[in-house]
Image 1 (tube, rainbow, N blue to C red):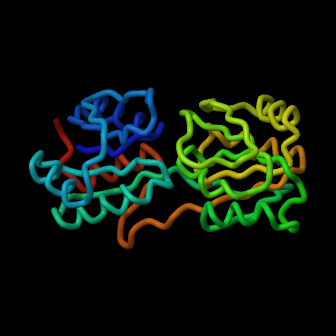
Image 2 (cartoon, rainbow, N blue to C red; image 1 turned 45 degrees about the vertical axis):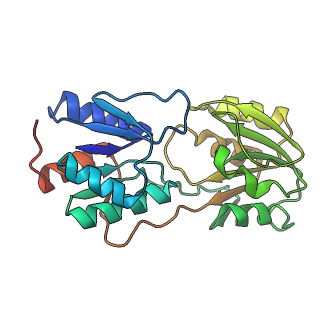
Length: 250
């Protein structure tokens, strides 16, 4: 079994498959986080080199099934997995935590891309503030390099590439608490939050804090899944799908 990982759901799935279902699992991590939390079972770090190389790996190792449990915004590896699985006839399912949904009192502005989020910050209908909490990850910061606002850049690892001229880097890893997010936004005078729609509980406290403080949130929508690829919302559903679609065993 090959689990394309890097998320908490991927770790929990690997743990369940190894410890409870006695399945041989190989978890593949992209290697973009310097000190990732490693799942049980066999672990490989680094990309495959494109869909053709991934297809060759599936054939060579006779992989019984692939679970794509990567980040909801890891569109490239998801597309590669879909192509490689189709080429080799390998069962594939995508494990994606549910997206966030707005609650009463939220001031969300949904946009399709990071570039659109950067543009939205200059729209006075979205925000009249100048101080931004940016939580989209270190790889997408270049989209905001031309903005005039002041940014608090919260990242896990040091960012690379162009950054907003007026910015401060805050290295932190979730989960975050409501109290901590309220303190952070108040202390830094945050006027608007920018986030990807990652889903899950680990980083959702910023949404509740923004709601309580009456701050707008620019939410970048997830990229769509490749056509025809099945998806499940949690580890239990992934295990049920694997049991129904593969000869799951050691």
